[in-house]
Image (cartoon, rainbow, N blue to C red; front, side):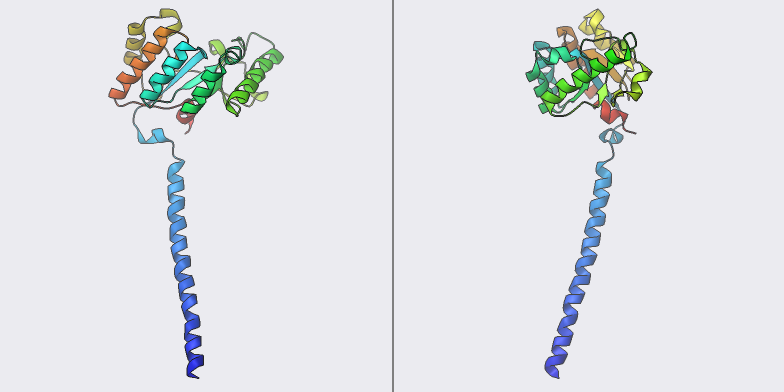
Length: 231
């Protein structure tokens, strides 16, 4: 009888241990879920000042590589809207963009005005560049910058890309004046702005890096457009 009683009591120990372990597991997973919920909150939600630097018409070679070096030194990620015809000539530059964590988007193949050509031509321009980007980076782009900011709403039913325009146009392609570009941005910038620049001009690259330096000193954080567009 004493042996039976001992065994009966011993059977309760695994049950208690099991209940204790289940309780610990529940607490662990609840804590893990809380952390997961925190991780899906966009990083910029923690900052009061955020902007997105975007660059069109590339990739260039020397200019873009210089820009990538400068952005890496400053721990800044940007968004590059690329032309398909230029990617074919400078795939190693795009590979570098991907490796450095920048967001790569579509800017058509030949820089066509999408609302000035027929729908099939527009689709071909976009699709061709999608395939080239996929070939280099391993994934299709999700965002499109329409050349000249001209968007054809009929394309919304035909393509699976989100069009991205801008809120602050530096007109760097026209002025090619570093000081003027920088001063314009510093005078006009607001949190949430999408800044339009081009990485194919030496003056634009110099201005972009100066803008980063000055805005960082003012407490701005640089994000890619997909981060900025998350609500």
